[in-house]
Structure formats: C-alpha cells, structure tokens
Image (cartoon, rainbow, N blue to C red):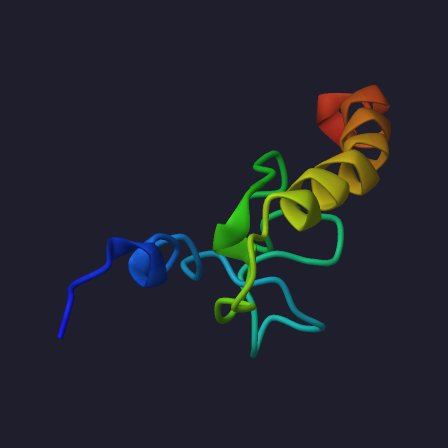
Amino acid sequence: MDYGARIYQSIHMTGGAIMGSGPSNSVVNRHSQSRDLHNLFVYGASLFPQNIGYNPAGLPAALTHFSAEKMRDYLKIPPCTR
C-alpha cells in the first residue's frame, strides 16, 4: 500500500475553542468571543468540533468576517462598563 500524506493534511486543524450555543458545550459564542474572557476573540478552525472532511479555508474566513463587526462593537464599549 502506498503512503499518501494528503489524507492527513487537515486532521490537526480543528478543536480547542469550540463554538456553540452555551457555556456547557462550547468555549466561544456565535461571534467567536470567549465565554470566560470577554475581550478575547478566537478565529480559525479551532472553532469547529470536528473536521468537515473538506478544505475548510473558506469557512474560517467567513466566520472571521461575520465576527469582526461584533468585535468592533465590543471595542466601542468603555472598559468600565464591560
């Protein structure tokens, strides 16, 4: 059997900061904002609970674009009211 690295190229990319609906099942909210440290926004494939089995480059880019507005809104809030 011939060895091919192509099937293993993205197995390390996912998990670690999973996005979800609540603190019991995720690290970040739907805007990629940490549930514990509100001034921390996480981007990339670490938001996915598992690999989608296809090149995920477009999805993290879309999530980053979607969440950038929420980060911008967060930065407008004075620090004493966060």
